[in-house]
Length: 213
Image: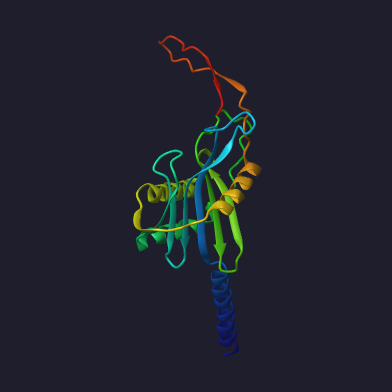
């Protein structure tokens, strides 16, 4: 009898712990964006500028806000959009996967210069804790790439409900600072010689010099 009572009490304690952990780690809001640094409309004094390509804000209530552009350097457009329950569930399942915040292994001998969006992911929990990371496509794992493809598709083909007013100035400032801590910007005058690979049976291509953007 005593063993049964002790077993029930132990099960209750374990259930309470699991319940508490689940509730304290509930995601309240996802802040997501694709951004980069560009040399467009820059000068020798300020050779780079931060560029926010698109932004998605998804709350656990189902409210979804979107900033997008029709093309590069076009004005920002702000909308409230709708997502199906299945898409929302897919997003949150990916966010709760432990692999979402796994740091990639450093590449001691990088053989490329990445020219594309950096994806800024920021999660706010119901405890007001923040979890943040910046994802580059070349180093992204399968879970991260699934989320990138899913949110890119939402940005490209949104189901728009209405236009909204959204101030992202503070978000852009914070995101720019966080990116500068993690990436290296090349000097505009720095030249890199690119030697094209030789294909058997064909004339070797000429090597060329490219100024990194």
